[in-house]
Image (cartoon, rainbow, N blue to C red; front, side):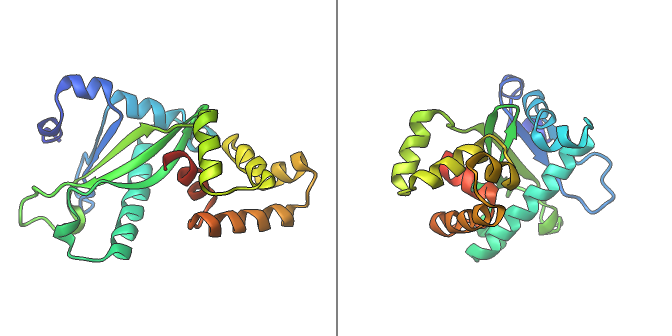
Amino acid sequence: MDSAFDYYSKDVIKNAAFIFYLPGNGKTALNVFYSPMAFDILMRSHTVRKKEKESASDILSFCDKWKKLLDKKFEEIGGAFKERTEQVSFIDVIKSQKRFYAVQGIVLSDSPQNINQAEWPHLFILDRTHSDHAHIAKSFRKWHLNRREQEIVQLLLGDHSNKEIALDLNLSYNTIKGYLKLLMRKLDVNSRTGIISKLLTE
């Protein structure tokens, strides 16, 4: 994994949140390298805390998930695999404590020709998103969200479940599900996470 240092200096490693991931073929002993900041963000994320477990193996789980999301995005775009390299793509958003981070993925192209394309190294970068009131208000105006949709989004940002949102707004569970489907259609996404990421990153 010394090759990771070819991409980043020690100063950058100390101050950036990134993960260098080599998918491998099951024979690789060590296929992930991450900065201390990235590890801290992920270990404080809602997903890991929910499992009540903090371990480096969770980093691999995140990487596997993000690689699949990136592969899926590339499949939708089309084109040769080689043409997809070095393209920075937004693929996910995670919540770490009270902050949100956008995850961007890059397939690194300068790999030996004898390495299978599915095993090419990936770089995942975690950038804090804008969750301040001014940015959210601007997003609400941009996507023409009505008052009820805005209320639901604010609760989504607070990591509330559909049932909690229904109770908080005094609406039925099915009504909330209906609103979320409408929001997904309006924002052209297919998940609760997609709603958040669209509003926080654009």
